[in-house]
Amino acid sequence: MFSIKSCALPDNALLKTYQKNGAYTDCFTVEVSADINQSQYIHAFYSTAIFKLERIILKWAVSKPSSDQQVLLLANGEIDSFAVWDVEKRSENQLLMCDHFKRTRSWLMVEPIVCKNQSKKENGCKTRLYFGSAVVPLKHDQTGKPSFGFIFHALSLFHKLYSIALLYSAKSRLKKSHL
Image 1 (cartoon, rainbow, N blue to C red):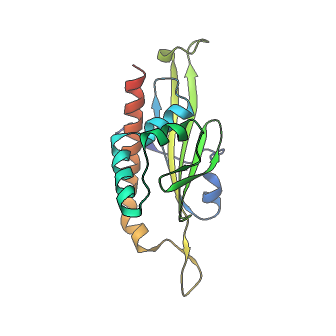
Image 2: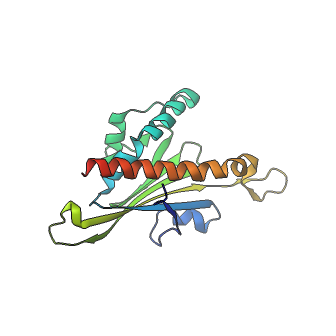
């Protein structure tokens, strides 16, 4: 898990709009020694054991079930709704998801780093994986000013650790599939 690094959002990140508008944003990155495309990353990320646990919790807590088949459809761009998220924006190398309450965003991005030869043999390529989140503040009842609230602050350390665990799990899954 020590390979996961916190970093600034890339300039072209779909999540950048929220950062500019005062939302909390974070960004984590890791490198994988393989040529990974966005579809593979999305599929690996949302089908890890740790994320499957989150999917089970969402099924029971907010009646939003999801399946491995839906993960595959999302990864291939065939659906735009998954569990409690809707696709807000998608590009060739990025996916920005918005929760149904419009308070949080989840963002995934792949960035090829280097291929040692023209044929892109798996052993000569590296891909940088990004995972980030945004939390949009609510307006404070009395002052009208943006506020994240007590729960956000209380859970911020858990969120960061969970984000690292999710990205590490996706990396591990991708490494296994590219051996």
